[in-house]
Image: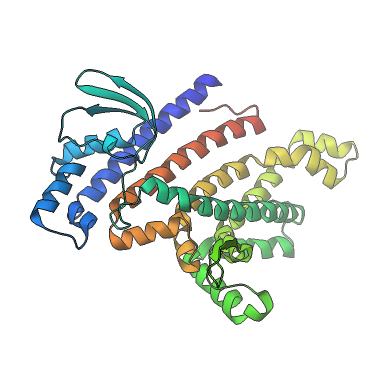
Length: 358
């Protein structure tokens, strides 16, 4: 088991290396001068030159790529030569160990994601730390809704196979998978947050934390979570229903289920004790993928509902060409993808001992 997990971690490392490389070159071949973006209105030739030298923008693209790898890597090397770019000039990371190697320092540190071009040099790591929890809460609630109702409706659909209820759920699932999230978000916000507001009490837009009318403090507004979580959970709900139905139908035709039925167990006991656990394997795999996707796919939902999460932050950064924020957010999401996939593989092998990590 340890060797298999290690191999997965190694594959994940190479995946992240590919993501870092692709993201860096994608955003650094775009037109625009990073130094000018960083300075905004405060531009003169001498200041621009100092900023380019300080952040390594005056170096070749290959050297800038090495600097970026060095910044995001937990293990990095830093020259002691004055005038050379080094993230050690910043304090937006924590140093765990520093080893003197003569002209170079070997540093064990937390990844350095640099500073925003547009938010007065605010560290990207702090921006992500402030917005990612909101997105994680939104995605978790959406997954919880889709898993709870998806498994229940999937079980019912398998028990009433080819009847009206089963066909109705199939149609609803197809529609749920087909409608884009941004369209669902607009419809839900308008219907439940505007047309039916007097009955629902819900707002068209709003985040988890809001400032009161007198500016005396920040309070949690849980009702603002309802609509975006429902919209974000529609597509995984449709997938879970169909996966659960098909998987359970397959399991119910196994020999051990026939044996359990012959012993006189009711349908409820048979599903609860024997069929449900094995039928959950494809559901767990799908849910894991959807959870990771939600962290990236919540962009449109957060933007429509004005939910202050990482998705909305990415849209704002794209609008203002804030490259460090975009690159840092994509890298963090990629890390979460890899981590979740590893955890799911372990969970999958636990649910079905016949399955081994591969």
